[in-house]
Length: 214
Image (tube, rainbow, N blue to C red; front, side, top):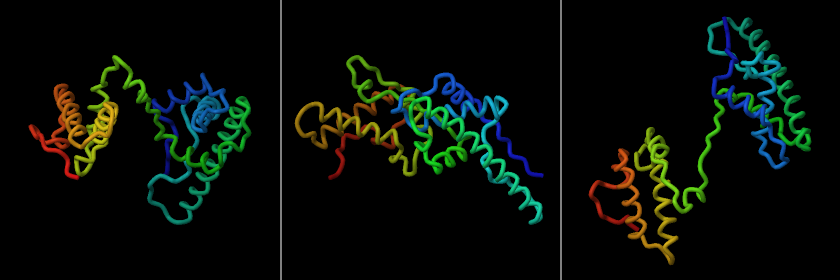
């Protein structure tokens, strides 16, 4: 027996409900914002308040060829009907904002349908806000970014972030920043974060004062 639960998770449901309640009305809004609003409409109407469009592929199963092909056809047709319904909601949302229905390509809609259960909205502060006078470093957010180190550890994204921030800080000092100046500011950032409990040993060797090699 094959069964694919098309119920969306809590985060996706909250995201879609929020977009439905406050849909994009500006013609400059992103395609994604219209797709999420349309998803909210689909869940509320065709999805009985909790189901999203069927992705289409069959779940893992053991079956003879003939039954498998029949099930595959059933799933594919249901996915096509769901995508058509989502496309109708999308067209209405686009029209309300004065945008034509073809604004969102069919390929983009299909990719969206296949990845609905993986949707996330990540809100970050702008670089301008971080650099504003009196702004504070969000240590918890930075620490969360280090929970899954890359291989090698020195390639972890948070380290690149700190390095670029150090370069920017050095440039703000005027003139062409030297490698020593960038390294000094990078070491200062390391010490500040370590004081808040973050392990940055892979970025700068503890107690090291060496400069990066050219």
